[in-house]
Amino acid sequence: MGSFLRWVSGWWRMVHLGAQLLVLSFSPATYERTQRGVLSRHLYLGTAPALPWFTVLSALLSLVVIRIVLVTSVSYGLSQYALEMMVRVLVLELIPLIAALFAALRCTLPNGADVALLRARGHWQALQQRGIDPLRQEVLPRVAAGVFAVMMLAAVSCVLTLLLAYLSVYGFTPAGFGGYTRTVGHVFSPAVSMIFVLKIVFFSFAVSLIPIASVLYDRPRSQSAMSAELQGLVRMFLVILLIEGVSLVGNYY
Image 1: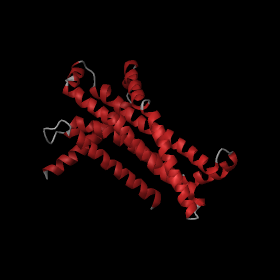
Image 2: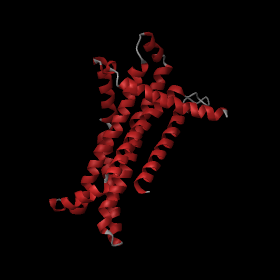
Image 3: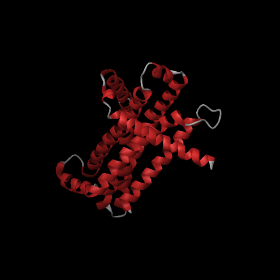
Image 4: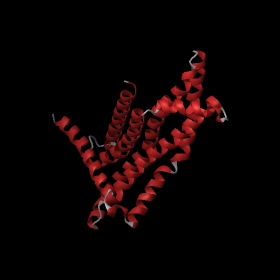
């Protein structure tokens, strides 16, 4: 019973932290001149160094998957469904998931480790003594950077994948643009588009909020300094799997 209560309490603290950060994001004090500098710096450092590498990796992955789908569909006489399958597999499912995991490894998990280090060095207490809210100063910019990174990586990679899919099927000609847009429009129905956007949004909040909330509130279960971070990592993967499962049910049930 005690373990269950701790489990529920941990999730509740994460939800509470998310609500606090949401309120802070609408506060005018968050966007004062000095705070804007901190926020913009974290947004840049969280996205710009990772964007070129992720774009190259997602392009290579997309080309491999596109080639596999094309060859398989032609061998089974289903080439008319190849383009729709590419869009569904890559754009709807793989790219958002990979973008969230890449942003977590590159941005949000290191941000959680930074927050844990700042607290261990007494920086939290120093800010509070100076009348500065640590959540606004240190946590909100890092969470916002993670959210922005996931959305930017997913958006750029999805557009690139759609372009590569068109070139792989039709080549460097505008002749297939009409059929291509009809196929993509058929895949992205209003319901599917809403699920797609919500999935990326929930992915971004999950990978950005959970690692930091874990190091802020979780008590270590052992003497290992990484125990709270590992708990957050497990929680993050569970939430990602849950979001992906719900989106699959919504798209294909």
